[in-house]
Amino acid sequence: MTLVPRIQMGWGSTRPRPAIAIDFSPVPSTTNPLGAKGAGEGGTVASTPAVMNAILDALASLGVTDVPMPATPERIWRALRGRAGG
Image 1: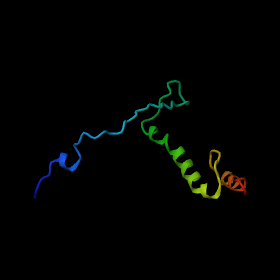
Image 2: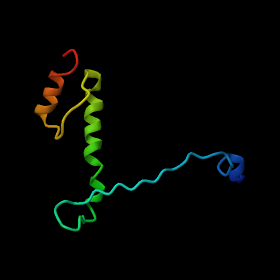
Image 3: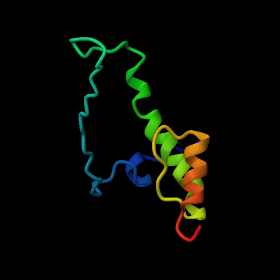
Image 4: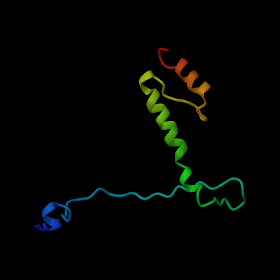
């Protein structure tokens, strides 16, 4: 077995790397004066936008550009009925 140095594989090169932007977007709880959340709640903040994006991606080919939240079956149906040219 021959070991190849990382530099020869291109892993340790001095090529420019993309910049990494770090952002902090606090979403405080409105149910208590401190705005504190339980440890498990922080991971659920992004789930609603992800589901809404998935719904819009699925309906984009049908001309739907917006579905109001919460995305109930009736709201999706109304969005389909009101789409451009629909």
